[in-house]
Image (cartoon, rainbow over all chains, first blue to last red; front, side, top):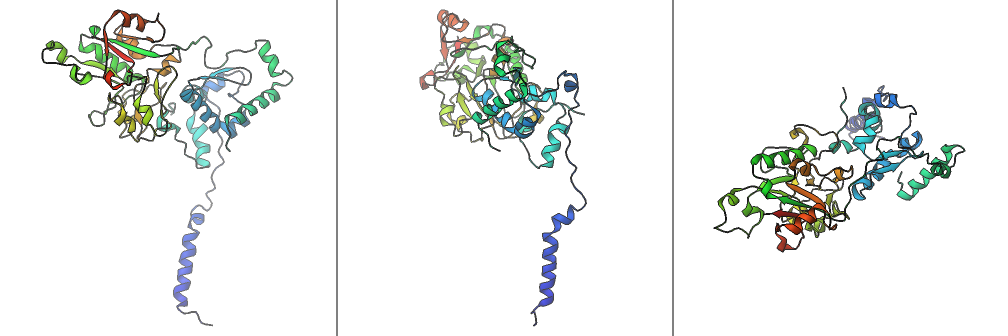
Amino acid sequence: MKIYDGGKILIGIIIFLLVATSPFSYNMGKASVKPEPKLDTPEIQKMEKKQCVEPKEFMKAEHMTLLNDWRDSVVREGNNVYIGLGGEVYNMSLQGTCMKCHSNKKKFCDECHKYVAVKPYCWDCHIPPKEN
Amino acid sequence: MTMNRRKFLKLTAVTTIATAGGISALELFKDSKLEAQGILPLEVKPLTAKRWAMVVDIRKFTKEDNYKKIIEACHLTHNVPDIGNPKDEIKWIWTDTFEHAFPGQEHKYMPEDFKKMPFLLLCNHCDNPPCVRVCPTKATFKRKDGIVMMDMHRCIGCRFCMAACPFGARSFNWRDPRPFIKELNMKFPTRTKGVVEKCNFCEERLAEGKMPVCVEASKGGLIFGDLEDPNSDVRKVLSSHYTIRRKSELGTGPGVYYII
């Protein structure tokens, strides 16, 4: 059996394979480092009982939903008060409450978001805390 | 990972019971173990009203400086950029001539100084706001207390509201405003490119129990209060002085009154 223009086709297939697998070869050996968000901010160190507005596991999975709920509650309903687990009272504010403790945005927010390739637009308007 | 409010509340309740470890949630409330260990001090009492309104006493604005201080205070507090050209200008509170502020009320023979005098203008927080009617995403909405507010998260920058507002109270962010803000107020967000903005009657300060920043800076030139409360400052001033409103013939019911 003879393949007409066999050479050209073979070269074409090789070029196609090279291009199609280029993302894999480009990233070869460059495994992303597992993100490790840090909690070592001065504000958190000061806390006796280190706890967020909700348990850690909940915050990990649902912080985006919580933030959306806070946003709607403050902006649309005019309610700024959030009652925590043990009855703690919080002011619902990303800039004022969340970032007061988590003043290390680069290490706390950006690291994971970068790893999972999400780009939240919070910081288009909200001002992140100053970091070195 | 969608979760509606109901599910969220349920989950919160379940985790409360799970982590309380022996102490039931009910008991926690009964024994008044409720302590404000959070950020918000409990003594903060938000200012509330049935209908917020403002009176501008123009007799108190005799010098250029009187206006400047107020505009500066507002724009500093709300991270309003100074872009420096009229096309891109962002303004929450500004001045204009009598002829422009109250068209149709001017005439040839009125006092000279009146013709030249600047008048302090801001969003009128109308009873029947046309900007709210035209907003396709409900980004602009009217609160129960009369404040016409914007939800920047929802604004798509269509600028219908700017066309609808007869008072020119709205500005569009043609470019990223952040580089043009001299001093950032870390307590308030900025805006982003492509959204409309305007005065919010200092809704964020009212929630903290403070008067609007322009009212504080005016030292008596601006009076702010509840229009539905007959004993409020605004009602007292309105019942004892002759006041006019901007373009009231349009039927939008402006909430800013001017003592002439």
